[in-house]
Length: 506
Image (cartoon, rainbow, N blue to C red; front, side):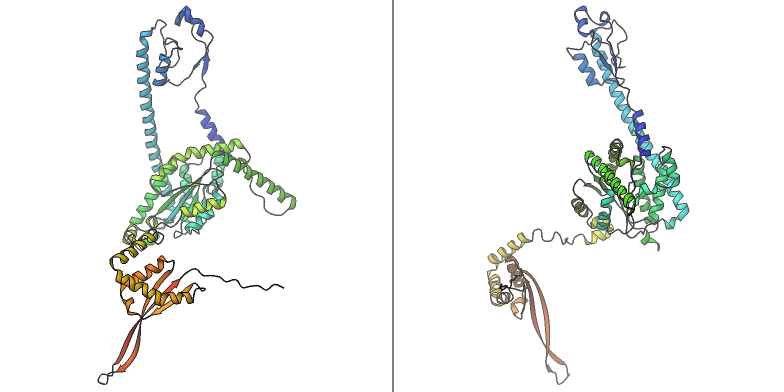
């Protein structure tokens, strides 16, 4: 959670970047630019002059407009006319110059952004490498044992990160306490910087985060609330993932290999629109104030922290704008890691259901690659029955048309041995049918029997057992001769019927 001391300097910094407001000036004397017939039409009209260069499209529009004279003087560099003797024939040349200058500025802007991006990546490497080295010097390289699974939670102000964090932890079976970046930055050193209106450096943030991750149990994962927040921090997150892979490779063939598993990173973003964010925070501030007033009156309970940002709508909207500005950085991570964008507008219960669905176990993400490849051909239990009904119909039609004798035997067996037992146990919802009928030794007949019963709405499982009964003893070898009998047990389940007892009323 950003504090006001972080937000207000940010706003001042943003305000300093705004382009100066347009100036309103009067046109030059008509004698210089217009004929007598047209000068009176423009004598008293103000002209908006922007310090930004007018784009080529705008320039063409101004020059071709029937209302605006092409010789009218503008103070923009691309259309400025310094000589009062300029005539209409110079207009195309001016337009071409404006277009070329606009293209040059556009290319320069793209180049500047690209160079800024490269600079940020380089800065992130320096920042992360130094922070990692500082932590490694304290703990030792062999003790850099980070949790295997890390959930990086971000969200709009008022999206309910604190409310929904327990649901995420339950969904993933994480028992480590969540790491809140706002708590990590509550140290005296960081507070001193914040109170001076200064930002805590990315290096310090990363270093504190690494220390906190090393304090966790590595086997059960952890959730980090509030990181990353900037372009540099996004790059640091990527570098951290790469460093965990390096450690895993380094210790793979050592006794410490179990402490350096393949890392699993998940990015989770809770989203609400701006108006809902504002309303939720104002309501939260109101409820906290009422709670604290009640505590003061009764002397019972604990006073809750009152955040300045829960009472000032201007600060609330400023915080939301900061979230929007940072969101574009997070989108870059969606191409690398599992990315969960969760609509947190609904009720707590509905949002929790979405979270549980999003964070279901996914073997392809959590198992080692070789392990997953070895077992991935086995169908999932949740998908095995998707086309079961169509397959059932196809099997029955096939046996009835191509092997009618087998189909008839299966039907007779059901009529003679299964149906009577089902009728006898109709109320219980389950019947166990034992049979020593030799036709069940044919796998095709067993398949048809189960298919027919399944089509009629019964759930059937079958078990084959061999009973051995002593018959005689060989007088020469004294070997006991056994008689083997095959017994087939069909467990048939169906909906149970409840009979309500009659109540005698007096």
